[in-house]
Length: 218
Ligand code: C5P
Image 1 (spheres, rainbow, N blue to C red):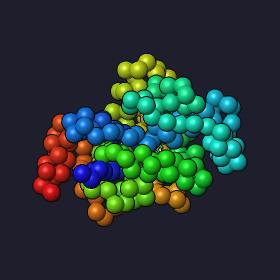
Image 2 (cartoon, rainbow, N blue to C red):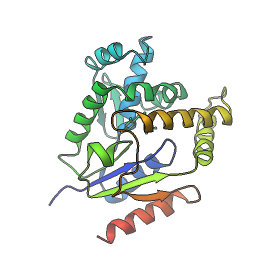
Image 3 (cartoon, rainbow, N blue to C red):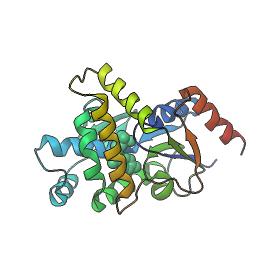
Image 4 (cartoon, rainbow, N blue to C red):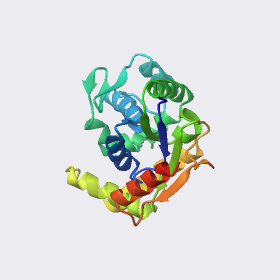
């Protein structure tokens, strides 16, 4: 009875977490949202008034911070921060923190531990390449930048963030993708052995169906 691991990578707003969450429920696997961990550290840095680009401040803060998951919620120093980490200010800053070597090493270690004892679906930017290179199933989920910006924009409007425009969101997503895919350590890239799904013109259920049928084929 071996644990099964499903690894998903892809750019911002492609639908990874929506698909992964639902699939985890269907398969009774645990869903691990690695982006939430980088977001939680970003939240702490901003709350402390520190500069996300200061490697020293970020690393020192990380070393005195606890980030963990309990029942599908994320806790920062034992306080649940599910909502706060989704604010746009976090999205605007997270990629600067996520490119720091020491930060990545710390996060990857925790993520690998989480996958050791149970069947998991994990999503992020470096899951298929660095965190779980031996995953049983690997997916690269993407969509056009216009579609991704559109989804993010709608999501933020629904949550009541009013001071944003579609154009701003599109620019921010492009900027985040650029930082994430050009950074020195563990850049976002489609690994050769990943199965690619373009969600631009697909519903969530169509994507899940495609993934499950791919899993069943093996
Ligand atoms: O997935 P999400 O959009 O919440 O991720 C937020 C940010 O965290 C990404 O833009 C990226 O900078 C960083 N990240 C990462 N590696 C991961 C997951 C997220 O660098 N495995």
